[in-house]
Image 1 (cartoon, one colour):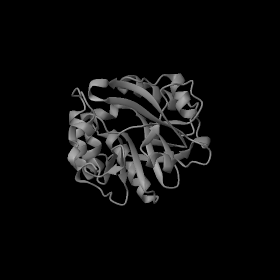
Image 2 (cartoon, helix red, strand yellow):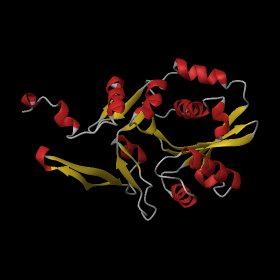
Image 3 (cartoon, rainbow, N blue to C red):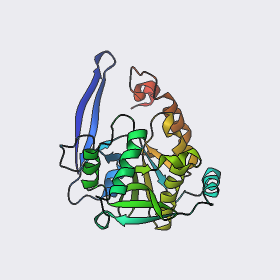
Image 4 (cartoon, rainbow, N blue to C red):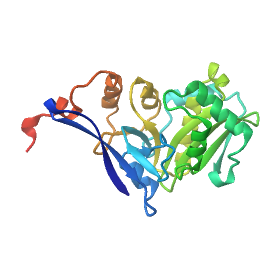
Length: 255
């Protein structure tokens, strides 16, 4: 893999200089080794042809430590009266031009996505990416109502983009159930990790609370201290004059 850094902001008085880390996948690279280093796929610029990743505070579930929480059981019990099912398709075996599939994806994105919107051209770009390997199709009474775009290899699954009929949200925690169902499927299929995207701000707290076995990439490795992660998420909105290393370092212990 090719790792490169792009200069960002700087604050010379505190000697704080920001560089964003990116990775380009090469043919010999596995997805597992790239995600293991804290990278997630980048699709913010459709002119990019390479398979590129950005480094972030990524969140994953260690499936060796995962078991159902009381919240998982509560949600599963609530949807038990529904005729829900899902099928996992390889991307090449799925009809990416299906009108119902595209409508569900775009309708959901129009109402739920904030910031980097999912237009039809961007959806096509995401679907064309090497990092979209499998699609989970969800059905209610045998009628499709939701989809999850995933990246799967021999060791891991990345729960990437989820789309579903938002009408179901008024009565059921359907998004949480879909996420749980993917984690459960991955564990049943003997994978090691499920990556759940980034863990920033209080909007990510439900992923940390609801699923056992979570850990986050802290810049140097995977950290299972969920108490620390919750503190970080709760303080992400605060302005910061220096980086976290200078905030917490005990400099007299550094040799």
